[in-house]
Image (cartoon, rainbow, N blue to C red; front, side, top):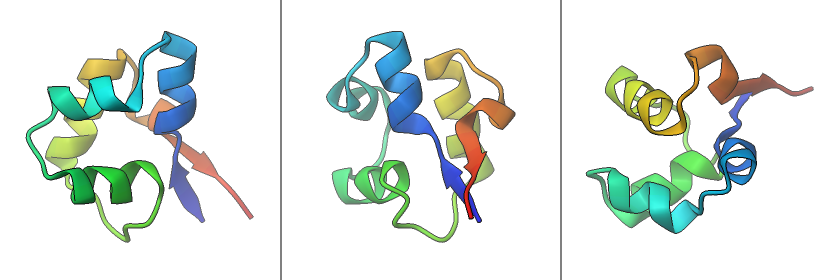
Length: 66
């Protein structure tokens, strides 16, 4: 199963979840569901925004878990 690695990337960049939320144009509920891996899908546009804001590649956003 794949999971988003957003919280770890934020910690490495010394940024907060609140900072990231303020950079995005989405509801807090949707944002929180995405970063806490409680969603089953994510739009390509959102992946692109996360990569731009976190200065990473799409492969960096995801981690594989058993």
